[in-house]
Length: 246
Image (cartoon, rainbow, N blue to C red; front, side):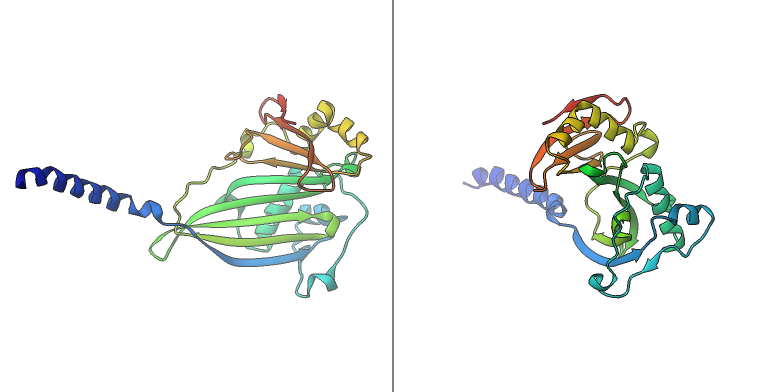
């Protein structure tokens, strides 16, 4: 009887040891909201002012959004590089930091279909970095959206503790097809026809994320119902080759 128990005991020991070694895998990252702010900007002058080194272009909104609501009917003609330059300047002048210390995770661009001739009317960037916090590694995530139509910049910072996942990074040097070029490719491949058929009563979202479902630029034309996409295309950020998804 004792001899029969030995193999079972050995198996139990191996099982317990293996489970104990894998126990940390059941741990989850805790999401902690650290900061959230909104700043007023003047889209008509911000690029020129920043180029001249003017720091006083970001005005913190301290009142409720309803009492500081500004909107502009004039579209901007900004490109991907312009939005990224504003983000860099925001980090430098407002946060006293440099984007060189952060890793780009993803970015998006938006516009209404009736703004197609003007180009990108909103942009968002997600950055992250690893820091040492409370005796463990922690990930800080920054999100910044730049919305010239609303005359504002929104910024938030979130901590993920402890850092258990490895996020993919987006290398701007490897993106040969810019957001505005990708949009023009989408237009030529069927996006323009889609807009016209909908009477420009639609909106367009461009996203790029290394860890996303689609590799490269994913551009979706949607009706006013955000859940409804009518045309979707994926574009290679290196070659410009595309595949129509929908």
